Length: 137
Image 1: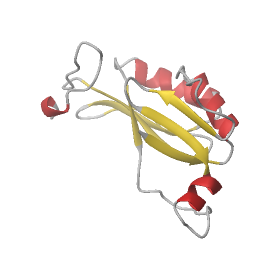
Image 2: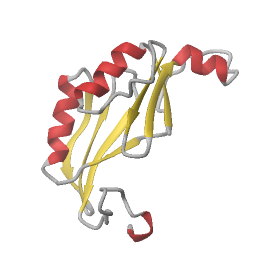
Image 3: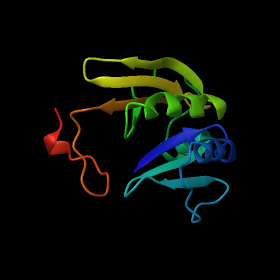
Image 4: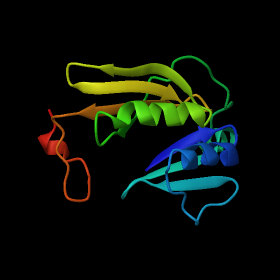
């Protein structure tokens, strides 16, 4: 499970829904969940998350030092996902670029969370398209 603190839960939920992610009906206005095939991306307000974690302030700026990775199923899917994110209100950080391991690009969601959209030929997936970590390079 990944929990992101966001400025507006409804706005961010709409952003992820527009990427084709399925929102769980068990959330509410202050908390949204997305089923990512056995994993969950959850959204809560930055203020509520900071308060719960006992931070004095929810404000911050600068490089967050973390990126979430969207695993594309094909190389062609990488630019499509990046374009979909931009059309939904995100911003492009790096266009789809050929790398020594595959193809990747980056976008930022409306709250500034960084996502890498990545495809690698060497990845191994099981029958349910779950990454087999022990077989990764």
